[in-house]
Every structure is written in structure tokens, then in C-alpha cells.
Image (tube, rainbow, N blue to C red; front, top):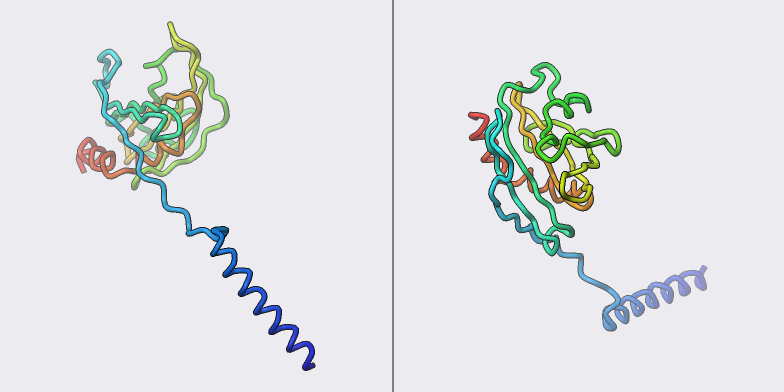
Length: 183
């Protein structure tokens, strides 16, 4: 019994020395710092005027977001299914703005539910054949408040959903959405 207690004390002391030595040589690190907020710059709405009017456009450079991303954002008041909202891919395809980029696009996978501020919706990545440009990946995101929907089209080399959803959940977009939706 006495030998076991002595062995335990020696093991604890050895662990303490190893931890102290690891800190001395820099093996033990401080917890990672949270990433800084990406810098989104507002740019001019690049699309022609249609029945939904112009929206807001933003760009985040690759150095800030990991890849260059553009987001085109606008409300479509009274255009959403009031009973179910944007709850399936068919509704997302109906309310989305991919036709601003091209009439040739195909879903890459099934969509998935998203939450933006207090609103629920859906996102889905698409391959889009843009005239006079190379094929790109676009992410359609739509989220609603009752019968009103806000549509975001995200254009990048990859889907870019993480940075896009973080931006859509920012105070800037939330305040804009509240004004647009009359809340």
C-alpha cells in the first residue's frame, strides 16, 4: 500500500514537471483567439432594374473571408408562401434570384435549413453558367418573416456559406431587414 502511494506521488510530481517544462519551451499554447469580423464593403447593385427593384450588394475580399465573396441581397414583400415559408427547395427555387446571374443553373445538392436573425429559411448551392464568364458556384439563401422573404445570392469560387451566413446575421443586415420588412 505504501509503495502504491509513493508511486502515485512520484507520477503526479513527474506530470507537474512535464507541464512546467512544456510551458517553458512553448508547447502549451493559449486558447485560440476568436477570428476577427470579416470586412464587407458595399458595392453598386450590378443588375438591371426588374419588378423587385434594386437591392444591396456587398463584397468581402479573399484576405478577409478566405475566398472572394459577393452577396446580392433584396426583399421580396408578399412573395413567400405564408403558411410554410421557405421550407423546401422548390420554394427556394421559386423565390431565389439566380436568374439575375443566368437562366442556366443546376443544384449541386439538396438545400438545408438556415436561420437568419429571427427568420427561418433555406440555402442551396448551384452551379451557374454565367454568360461571358466561367461557370461559378452560387449559393441561394432565402429566409422569411410571414409572407415576406429576403433573398440573398452568394457568388464565389466555392459555396462560401459560413462567411455569408455570418454576414447575414450581422447587425447591419438585421437592422436593414427590419426596416425593409416594416418591423
